[in-house]
Image (tube, rainbow, N blue to C red; front, side, top):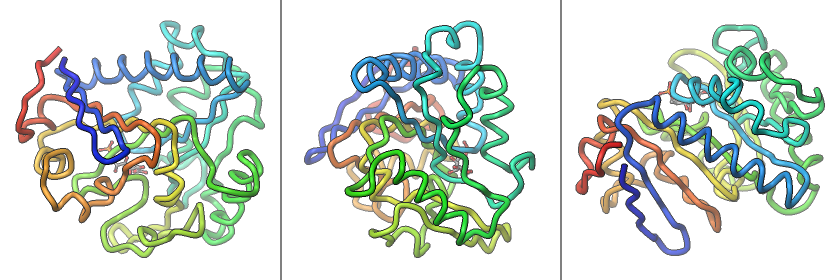
Length: 259
Ligand code: 6PG
């Protein structure tokens, strides 16, 4: 494994190349344990926003496993979501269901620590309600600062539910907005760029050859990075770490050593 660090302006962008998703997931779980412990001790709580999709499922399962579960003080962990599909919470497409099945069903955590996006409700109302919940937790003024955000990247370069060409990408005032996707016809709810980029730490988990071209444009020196929503994720002061597998890193100039 090789950590290639590139400092861009104030943002320190790091990426680490791993041989496969299993190693990425264990590394992410170890770092989750460490950052949750540090935050729980220093501030008495740890706020994390999770993404859906398939890539982070193994991470969530590991966090709920006997290997990692006992290392985390779940009473102090507050789960949020980076985005959600507008479906019932037991629907197979629900990001809440993904986290419930892999992690929440395996741990003991206070109900008030689960800040679910109510995908079953009207999208506009669900976005307003979730923003209120986020504000109540972080304070009514200024931008919320999540201790950690876990993101994935779609094959088109989207992240959370921020898609190229979407009005949601331009939103700078609201923390949470509804998004309507033509294909497949579905409503979603997403955190906006200002909130995501205000996070203290962001882990991007990206695997697969199908993402190699876009990833090389985002992590390379190309000027096209900003055409992809994932390329717009640049924490203002926080740390951004890309955990990628060898296939996804296939077009990056400097090939890291595989671990
Ligand atoms: C979602 C996610 C989304 C996901 C990417 C990557 O709700 O679908 O938030 O942004 O992270 O689509 O998905 P994979 O991990 O399945 O490639």
